[in-house]
Length: 492
Image 1 (cartoon, rainbow, N blue to C red):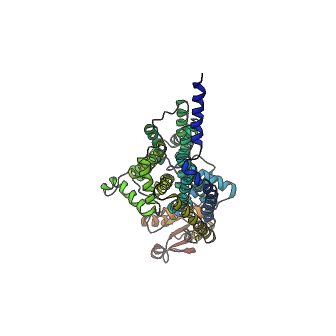
Image 2: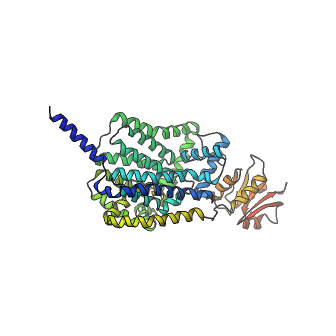
Image 3: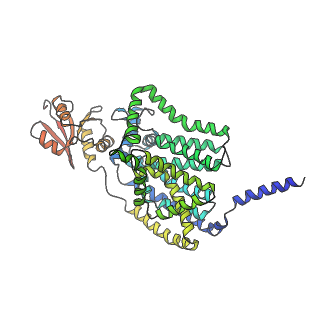
């Protein structure tokens, strides 16, 4: 009869020990209480202040923005449209977020970039939480938060209206929910919901989360309760599967063909030369070696600590990095921003490396010096935002073309025979007309002869060679290398 109370007491003592701060953490508690709110405020200013200036690049900000604008134009939230035709390549979550903001507050560049900025701030805050959860060390959590807030490549994309940072945020949310589910299995459902949001943002990269979770179950010898795991799996996949099924129902084989071609071009298609198929890992390693400074050495040291250590909770970080790296290396497209979903793990690993290699007293002194420097940098960013405009050339052209045409009338677009989809996207976002895309000199001349267009945007070299002295027209606007003209009746 006496053994039962002793057993209960031992369990309570174990739970109390886990809930109590790590012995190394006691000295950092006061610093954490001071640094966390400071870092949170500075991070908010850092990611939100740039939104008040600047505009949208053609790749891919203006593309997502004009597709979101078309959601409100058509009223169709399930089938995305670009240039008046279905856009079947990407899942719709980012466009849904942008369209919701546009519906409430109107169209603007700042609102198109706001989802990325808010998700970027969420990443910085959640990195602190996850680092403290995995390490039980608040000073390590503060360091991880500081590393995340000063990762310049990550910050660059918080100011872009693209899927990369929102996808990174949903991946991090899913990992956080997964780490809680070890003690409370109801959180498997939350992990499934966050996985669904990630897959609705970027479908193929959404495979990161199932792969990480399965591998973590194997290496940690963890058995999830099936009464939660199976519903979580359904929650993770049903939204994306349902959206794809709806598109297949509407468009049939055409959707499969369009989506397969897109996947072939972006994910698993051939490379030239063919041997580049096997160089993805080296290319991404080289890109990281060039860009992830000053935190690369600390991150590598933290990776060694996590691999060699016996703490299975830290293996989650190693698997997270390994899966993202492997999927990126195997894909056809080789762009460093595809590695952004691993940056939260990088930040925590860098904090572990700093804790391992730098004495605590030096870290505390370093933070005391770094925080005022960061504050000055944030103040400079807020007071002197960037003035470089990505669409300075396109905006007057788009405005003139819209003013000279009737609603529903298309504008011809030709730029030296090049598929300039960046300018195409900006014309649709900053203007309010769809385009007739002309990709060859023959297509241009045929359009002129057949009077297919009344208003035309084209490069100035082509204008001088084939239009200026040969076809009756009126110049509406000139900007950079482009000119917008209106043809006189019968000039074809």
